[in-house]
Every structure is written in C-alpha cells, then in structure tokens.
Length: 106
Image (cartoon, rainbow, N blue to C red; front, top):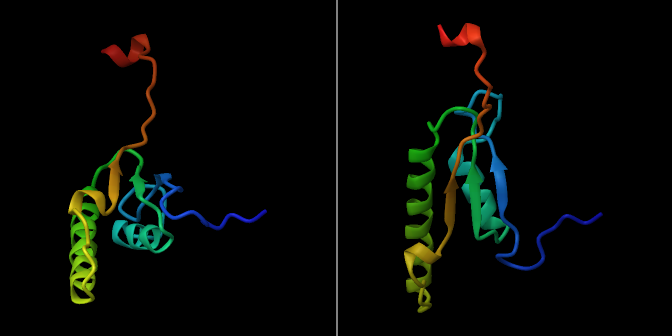
C-alpha cells in the first residue's frame, strides 16, 4: 500500500511524540515540523505523554521555518501569504485518566 502524500496539504499527523516526552521518541519537535512541511502537510499535532516540554520548541521552529520560507518567496517575487496560514502546530497531550479508588482519596 502506498502511503505517500500526493495531495499537498491533505494529510495531517495528529499524534506525534517528541524526544522531550517520556516514551523514547528520537525526534525533536523542530525535526517533526520540518519533515511535515517537506511532506506538504498543513499541520501536525505534538502529543507527548503527560508533558508539554516540546511546545516552546515547536512554536519557535514554526516561526523560524516561516521566516526562512517567506524570505525565499520574497527573493523570487512570490507572495508568501500570511504567517498564520503557513503551518499549524496542534498542541496536545496524551494522558491516562483513572477512576479514583477509596485508597487514593486519603
């Protein structure tokens, strides 16, 4: 089965863990965002388990990649469009909710 992304902007990854999470992922938020942009995705969700440590890096990476892309576009006479339309980072967190037990209420 071919899993390549053939229609630009149609695929969005809604579940990515970064190396700042607790499950042993090997990619940084910046690497994930860069790869998603290279694959013509319009967004990606950062969903580490129980932590939000990668959020600042994700925001900075998106801003940095936008600046570089906008600069390239302007240099070639292309309108880069609006920054908010460039790429979306969906900030989330995976967690487990447990029903309280009588022992845990003490």
